[in-house]
Length: 134
Image 1 (cartoon, helix red, strand yellow):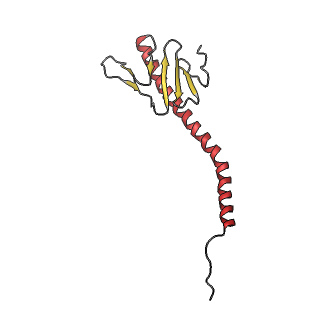
Image 2: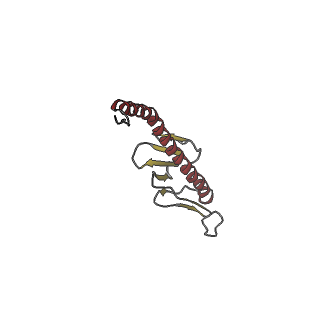
Image 3: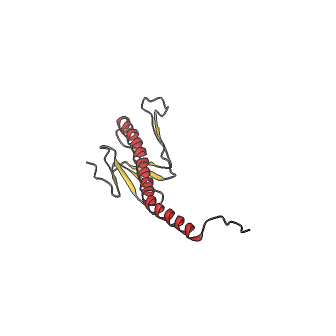
């Protein structure tokens, strides 16, 4: 009596590996594009929060605050020392800075891949180079 063999042949396994490789080649560029899009959204969302706090700070003090990502921007609007607006950037993916002289908020990715910028006065954002805020 002959025993039956079970399992896959080598050629079947190679074909499956090739198909998985082709699927990975198609999917990975989209995956990395989505990651970069999410990082961009995170940067602009946090910079917009900084912008709103800076506008409130400017309305109260007549100048913009200088902020680095290690410190939160706190704005006491009504004078009761309660910090009515408080923004703290997440330094995990980006470091944020506010330059009060140029009125530009910057977000630098920790890997140094892309820098994002936003004008405080106009809310105009850009990637790579700082916009002219006029």
